[in-house]
Length: 103
Image (cartoon, rainbow, N blue to C red):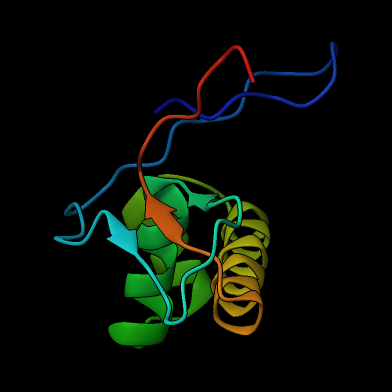
């Protein structure tokens, strides 16, 4: 899934290099209701792996993914918010599954 810029202006975002795809594509907390799922893209999952699991500094993760430290910071903040929201709201977390363009 390609990341896209928000709004109509500005430069296109640099596509981060993904080291490895997570085995899990979906996390469903219990109890699972009929809540809308939360989508986390592969770049966000990769940042979580590099920083939180591998213990790299944000600058090191940025070099490995080919993006700036600021981009790493934004991806990390977004990913952590989505994981926390999934846990506390009991919503499924879908990893790297493209969003339906019509919805």
